[in-house]
Length: 180
View (tube, rainbow, N blue to C red):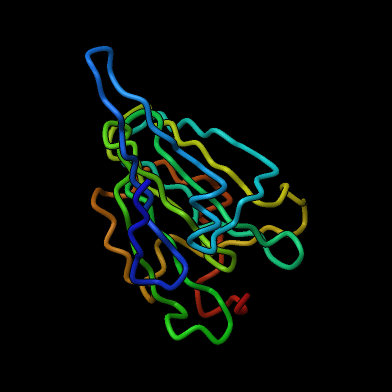
């Protein structure tokens, strides 16, 4: 496994190191030892799948707060997604900054998202399927979000925005939320 640090401290793009032969390949997507060596979370309590049907659809920017704050490991199983994380950690030198990674089922890459980040994505084709590992179970009442279209975040979405949920359309602006 290859851990490529992203510009926001604690976030990584995780790449596979396939072992190939005539049949195909084998690779680890996750390994306790490798994640521990990098000081990363090794406890996953919940795994989720999302399927997004239409190209250009936006989901996010979502987070869990308080005791429910979570680390995420997100991978694209089908299609491609423009994945964005925003640093919401109180006192962080990169507070309010974002970084993006294109998650691609063919590349089989993933993004490691520390606690204190909002997460969202835009589908780059139809029928995109993402897999999420979470360090904490979902806890109703602890969810939060930031509006994906907030001009203060200046996220340059690669496609015209489409298919926002009613919830995501009404999420607050970055200036209206508290640091985590």
